[in-house]
Picture 1: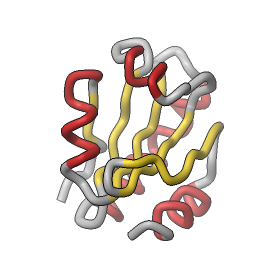
Picture 2: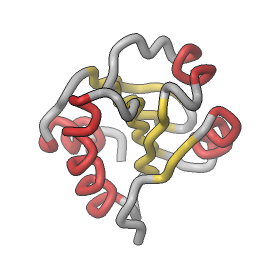
Picture 3: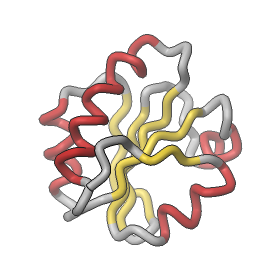
Picture 4: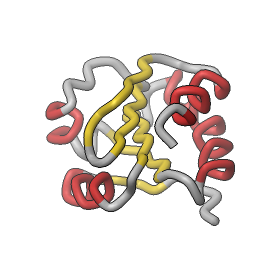
Length: 107
């Protein structure tokens, strides 16, 4: 069981999303205060859901192609994918229960 979220890049994104039935991707950047505030929550969600879903982070500065493809204009943005398709999006600093309730719908 992983205790840290996976780190995705433009080149790894498609394969990671398609090879996991459910995935939550946190689009973030190091300079973003709310993103840094959300990081411990993402780690907690990873610990709880590691055997049920892919929990990953994608740095929008390092992987701008994927961020642009999904029209991520505000960060943090978390997108939940099911069977490779976007099914839900949470924008802004969300509490853990809101994230887990959204994730739970697709498991």
